[in-house]
Length: 368
Image (tube, rainbow, N blue to C red; front, side, top):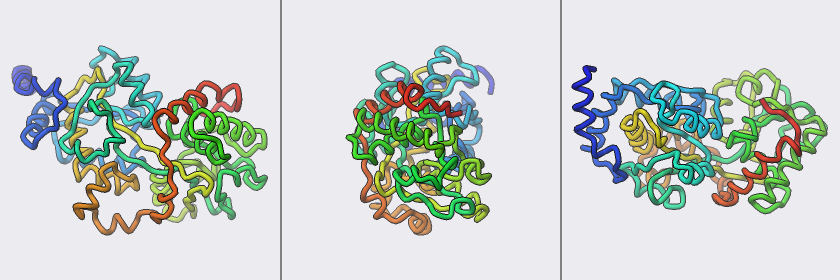
């Protein structure tokens, strides 16, 4: 695009750059024009098999042609995303993320550190108040519960609880889907293990989770590698703790080879909300806002649901009968979710602090 054309497009929406109001259809059209002038959106830590993100990204590009989606480090954890913002302050190059998708506890801390900027999407009022920052700095996008995905060709008896993982039959079989010193999914799993022992959510459960994993490691049941679909299928880590939406997507991908089962541990059904935010230093701020508008539209939310994630606007979509029947039929038994607990921000922050600071000293397993 010619420089003068790009400049004119940017000037025509200059007021948009600092606003936090809910966008109208006309505003979204203006955002699209400004985003096309920028030409690119840089995302980070979005594996294509996570929440159906591969299809979501392709649908965004099809809906808004002219915007290239630059995908950084798909396997990064939430902590890595925050560090990428810090490391690229003032950098307008391809290594600077425009948007992040991180665990709930990273929202307030990123706001306090002035690493993210406010923006309220047009569907703002349908996002539960408990899952968003009142000023629009961060907002919940989807949630799931922690589960075990089990390679049944190698593990005939699936563990039904966290406590079961201590059994000798699971020697050298269990892994976390991330580094518990940085990745929210792994941090949440350690917290859940602590909750399964009866510890109170927060620092108590974080410390109890560390002890649990120290014992699991001493027993020889913990494999210190990052568990993904391939290690499960290959048998390197035939049991992995992962969010249910990841586990169910991996199972679909196996297509029966290997045979796999997804189990929600009975002694701790722990739910986790992830959030979206725009970097305070986003080089492509209009593309970032357009991305948020798409993700929080009915179409974007249903895209996540197709990837087994429970979109934050699920109740609103259900009330409008906007959810396709075939998608509803694929969801796990709702009774599993009736027992789910949602640790508060303070509890998550306390658990995260205990786990990330003390993992090396207490567990001593270098997960990578």
